[in-house]
Structure formats: structure tokens, C-alpha cells
Image (cartoon, rainbow, N blue to C red):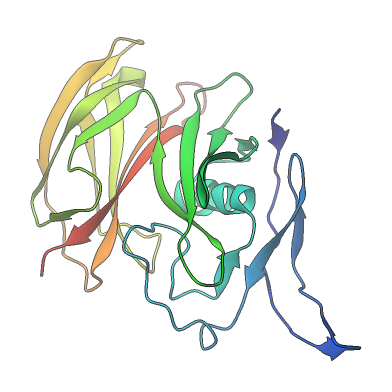
Length: 230
């Protein structure tokens, strides 16, 4: 079952010892459970960005104790989805699983993969996949340099797939472009070399997104973790 999310509360954690109990501030409602999105001072979690993680940024104080909240935040803040519909978490392993995200009832599903990667047992987004946006190259966690060749299969309104190359620490892309695949529900190949200014950070993501023919909003996305050659 899907529930429309309108916002996520992410607040700083203040640990106050009262009668030996610690209270964590910052709570949101999910489709099936009460969850907490956890923000802690970065000085208390000196971790670097996990090698496979796209979101959240280790340089941020934001951490997520709930996988659904992590997926929702990623969909809104990183992918740029407007008021997405977020489904329940489906475990695929002891510390990993998927969360389905749609931008409208009955719309295409973008599957957000999440894992617990760090000692604080919080959740990190490692990839996103939409069936109409298959990215064959680069593969996940490939080391890329400019220009990077993108190839795969897609179908989109007027065949246009929006590309963003994003470095860790900022949602502002270091490069944007488009690739042209299939359209009108017919899948077709795309292949293009895209130049970008190499960021100073070591990792980031290649993001593919398609827009609605109705209002131009993003409706599906595929995101792959990559490393940048320096």
C-alpha cells in the first residue's frame, strides 16, 4: 500500500540524560511503522562516505534509522521527485532491502535500494532503478573520467532522458546533459560520451531521469554509484 508523503522531519539529535533515558528528537510517519530520521553532529560520527553509498552525504549530520524515510528523502532531495508515493520496505538480506517509489498512483516504480553500512546501523541509499531506464555503462562502482560514455536502453517522452553527474556532498550536478533512447513505450538504445568537470571528491553518482509529458516533473530515475579518477 502506498501513502503520500508531504514532508520529512529531520532534526538534530539532542541526547539528554533524564532518569537514565535518552530521548531522540525527530520523528515521521511511514506507511506501516513509526520511524525516526536521525541527525547527529558530524563530530560524533567521523565516518567518510561509504564506498557504495549515494545518500545521505557523510559530510551532512543527517542519518536515517528507518529505510523508508531514507528512500523518501533521497527521492525528494536527490532525485527531485515531487510528493512521491512511497511503499513499504522489502528486505532482501539481513541489512539490506528495497523501497518502491512512485510519483503518481499507478505510475512507474523507481526501486530505491538501501543498506545498513555503518556502525550506527542507519540506512544508506546505494542505487535506484526504473525499468524504463536501464544503464549498462558505466556499471555500479566503476571508476570514471571525463568524458564518460553512457549506454543503455530507455523509453521516455519524446525519447529524452535527462542525465546528471553528481559528486558527494552536494545535490548540484557537476554536469548535465541528455541522451536519446526510445519513446512512446518503445525501448531503444542510447550511447553518448558526456564531459564533466571532475569534482574534488572521490565518489558520486550518474543519474538518469525522465519527465512527465503532462507537467514536466520527474517521474522515474536510475542512479548508479561511481568513483572519479583523479
